[in-house]
Image: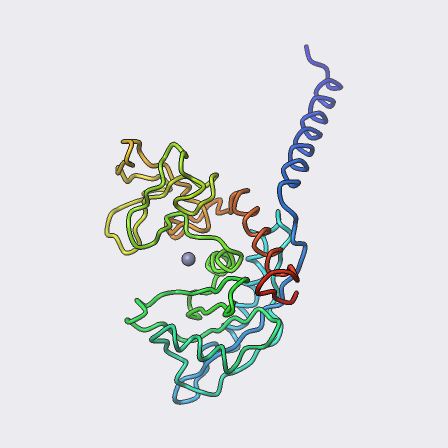
Length: 273
Ligand SMILES: [Zn+2]
């Protein structure tokens, strides 16, 4: 019979081992340990109606703060800082990426994480949800259709900001990443702990049902795909909202991207917000 004392020490040992494991893993990447203040820029339409009213702004503040939970292992959190209103209705409905660049040029606040919120992308932009520049880019801003902002979509855009690709990368045709992982560092999202993902945006194929991956396509070796359908950088998260996460490899990539961007020796250094 196992005594209570044995159970206690056994449990303690498990806790210590888990702690050691977690500590050792963390040594694979440097934690960012930073709160990012998000500067909002809100558009208005021709009649002066704001894309984001006071009630919606309160929801967006909460959504952005709540997105921090996905970044806990890397020590990143978010909070809405200053809010500015754009007195120019031409940016309320976005038709081209050039408009986004133009808007950035006019309204960006330096050394801030600028998030532009507008009514919508029109059909020429495929009615999209959001676009994000990388922290290492000249235009490192976030642009989102205001209705899209929720903790998961904001976390997804911040994933791009910190250098992550979609798990189904490249986005416009079938991935050639192999299920066996043999080309995982050069294909797909180039991160090896996110399995090959055959998703094609806009495809009518049924991919997920009841939180299970049901697509029966195979890779070049004839292996069946088994992507991480709860990964924030996939496009399955809308059909399966449980257990959403970034992978340890994705945290490592985000850390590397961030620290390369603030390296004063980098070609395009950015200030620390
Ligand atoms: Zn994306």
